[in-house]
Amino acid sequence: EAAACMCCARRFKLSRRRHHCRVCGEVCCARCAPKRLDASTGRSQRTCERCVARGPPRVNLSLARQQPPPSAHSSPLSASASGPSTPSTSPSPFAGGGGGLTPPVADSHGPGGGGGGGGMSHAALLEVYIEDALHRLALCWYGLRAASIGLTLLLLATAFVHAAGWRGRAAVAATAAGLVPLRPFVLRYYRIVWLCAVVSWRVGCASLAVRGRSAAAADALWEMTHRVNARFVYDTVASLGGFWVKLAQATSVSSALPEVYKLELAQLQDAMPADDLPSVHRLLEAELGPEWRSSVKLYDGPPLGSATIAQVHRARLRVVREGGRVEEVEGVVKVQHRHVERSLLIDIGASQIVALLASFAFPHLFQDMRVVVKDLSVLTRAELDFRIEAQSQATARELLAASELGGAVFVPEVFPALATRRVLGMEYVEGENIKEVRRRGASELEVTRIVTALVDAFSLTMHGEIFNCDPHPGNLLVETATGRLAVLDWGQARRLSPAERTAYTRLFMAVAMEDTLLMREACADLGAPQSDFAGPPDPMPNTMVGTLRFLLRDTKQAAQARGDFEQLE
Image (cartoon, rainbow, N blue to C red):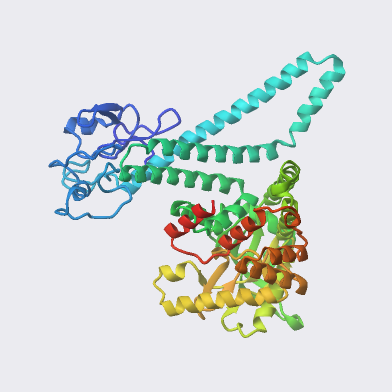
């Protein structure tokens, strides 16, 4: 990313923003790349002084309603759209006829001269566009915050001035003091409202902008809209953390989403912002005592991964085996993020309030929402205590080791002496994320073996004592030395009783057979009775069955999955 204008060399700042020349792609300030009228298209576009001095532009990046006829200076990608005589160099969602965005191609007239490839690449231009859009959104956000704070202070000051007597003013002062503890709660959900408003607004604007344009131009506009929205959603969710990251993790594996959203949100599975080392050291001292370095020797460098609740650092761990034997092993230390507990508890409290209000306002639709939120809140609170996770992980390790899957799937060993409420020590697993198996060109036989082991492991835990409720790809590793599958992160785990296992089995059977009566019985056995079944004829039960069938469907290609999603809507 350019830090200064490529023409005048002045550094960019709030009052001197980045703009790119629509001809050569160089990043310049507004003074060096003003908007000029393009005689060939009749539209104004930013053009830098160098391109003006060089002559007519060779590349037009504006969204046109109709593709202009190719000229002698057209780029290879533009020429390939008009006929098969010139091969295309690289496929792009923005290339092609019909008025799409034409990527800039460096030629002898580019900034570098002599075919040196000085022009900015299409990917770099797109990144500049995304950052520029996010910069404008950030300015709007800070403006809204300042306006909201100013309006609140104005209302409080007005009420204080017009209050009758000292008691009235004391009441206003008490109200102002009571708003201070609510500030984190209000700010978090103000940002969620802002996120929803921005995404809805941009999608609505894109829907209007594509009218009358060619298919290629419409695809380009939608691509840019989705890319900006996806990055904006990721930035917002990553900064909020807590419950919203959990929701985004679940959403990132949905095949009905556009690919750009899945790519952005997939980073939340194991690439959350990490705390700095001094914060980690302070937490280790608070949890393990002042002499924590005698048991934990952290390696230098960044953490191995950072997720919603904690980050993982590689370390040498000093553990005590049976018989009092002391041993140093290669391990990892899972350390809880600072302030994550407060954020999660705020989200839990807010979701319970929303569920209560929704059940009263729309009892027909949300009468069972409180049960779902209550169950989720219990799981989330348990995930904040790593001692519970250590017990669950030890139970799952014993269950898999004692089964016939012990040679194919395993759970890392935990060390009880290093398990506290916010710190958890366990063995280190050298391996690769399950998503990387196919990317590195693994054979179909190896992929089938890994997937089969994964399905068998979840089937075993479903019928065993404990079940992992958070099976996203970030928690699955393939061990390098043995090829075994390692199942990580047992923070969200349920201990199912025989009656609950039977009820869940009946629920899945009811969904598969579209049997609403069997689903009613299964829900009642799970403690969530569906009173809708007892009333007059109602489409709600069939809608629930259809929704569950969609959620439990086999994964398909993205286009086919989007078609299924539209049918569900």
